[in-house]
Image 1 (spheres, rainbow, N blue to C red):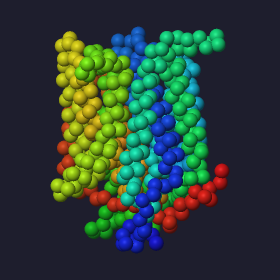
Image 2 (image 1 turned 60 degrees about the horizontal axis):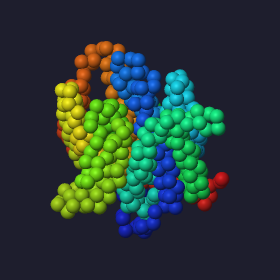
Image 3 (image 1 turned 60 degrees about the vertical axis):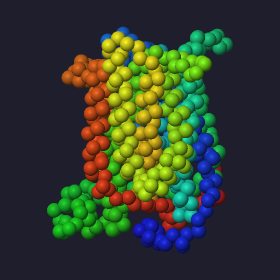
Image 4 (image 1 turned 180 degrees about the vertical axis):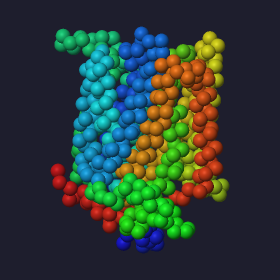
Length: 502
């Protein structure tokens, strides 16, 4: 039975199961620890390099922002290579395991070389290779554990997967800034600084994450890699482009490739392009969203960081304000999954990934209205309370729920079985493109270029305009997008975990 036939199979022919796959605890545990590592490091990255390496520069903040967004771009761009490596050569398990070791080495460099810029940047490069390479494989590995009998649990699983991401982020975002501000200590005659501890703890958690992943090696369903052949996405797409003049009336450009390639392969490529049409809009979201870990943190250093809560008050460290995001994620995931979405469905409105993404764009734009108004007050010499930035975090977290989780599910379910990791890599590359855009803007500002005029609140109003443009365009064209579900079946040669060697 081929993929198309599997999709068309009548629901009554499948015996449903409400049991989660056996590998789920290892995947969740691994993801929580790995995300602690990544977000713990990233939480303090911008403020640390601005003060440690660029403090002598007039545009230290812009330079630090440029480095941070370039790092995020490189990490997510590497996901493309990681996806190809997993789909065509090593498989997801081996790709995740070996690149995780590289990831650990990179974290070690950050902890050991906090005063040496060249070695610190080498550490970031190693993390780029490791973290970027495993990203698409981890997400796709989640989906591989499901089949036709329990695919109805996939939405909940991606929700819990995202829950694990933010649980790790929550803990690390709280503790890492505290570690960073610890006084120097003498450990057996060796001086250990706060930043060394702050970067070292995430490194240790990454080592734990790798160990947890290894422990589950006999539990994973492993979909073997498909050897890279001429029947791949790039080759077939280029063949169709260069032979587009041969297509018949009424055919699409890719249909001409059916003259030289199997029809199923061409249909798979068409499915990928349908997914990429949606992904083309997502970089606008990430360009704004990822500023909450860089630009927003620097903005917080100019705000009143004490908030009143009834009979008590909280004084935040600037980097700790990011803590609001994972806290809200943990609260919003069940709220949206079990309350808001079902309530909307009961109103007769179908909740689809595309509709959630479109709505998410509107919330993204609204969050930057708040941030721009805050910056207007700072430009005027005022010290607005951090509570206003927390409001912006609330709004952009709603956008994240609507866009990021929906995008993960859409990327996996709409990808043909042989290209799951590659499509997930394309989803992650939207983060890369968004951050590259922001990095280039900040680089231009640093060098005193044309965009140097984007100062203060003007900077944020510029990005507000960018996301409004893409939101309007998405809402107009998304009605043409089709949604198709491709699930792994027994014919995709998944390896039973009981047969996997050590």
